[in-house]
Length: 116
Image (cartoon, rainbow, N blue to C red; front, side):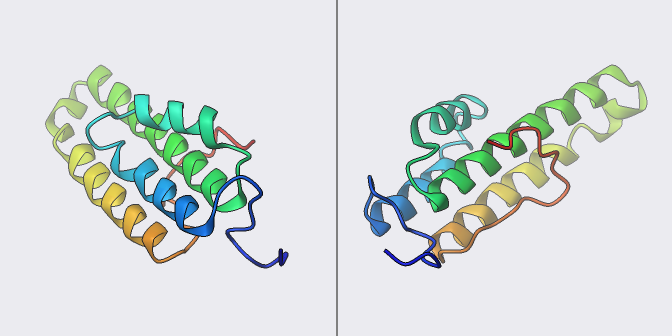
């Protein structure tokens, strides 16, 4: 396979890899944190495209969890608790759309804690 092919995978077809990348973002909406963790451990290393998307989904989930904890701890943060869920939902949908278009999407304002 070609080195510049984003779907270059031994285990998955390009279509399956794309569908799993979309699912890694959309399944995180009803199953936040559980779906990205499972997806990361099951699909990392299966291909560069799916590995990138499950890593990004997990990093975004961790970042949003940390943001919510910080807002819950601070008194002023209680006034802003409505902002992260809206941002979180919009970014999950955008990431799924970008995955469907075959793009390597990176969530903005996200800590990159999981690199491998």
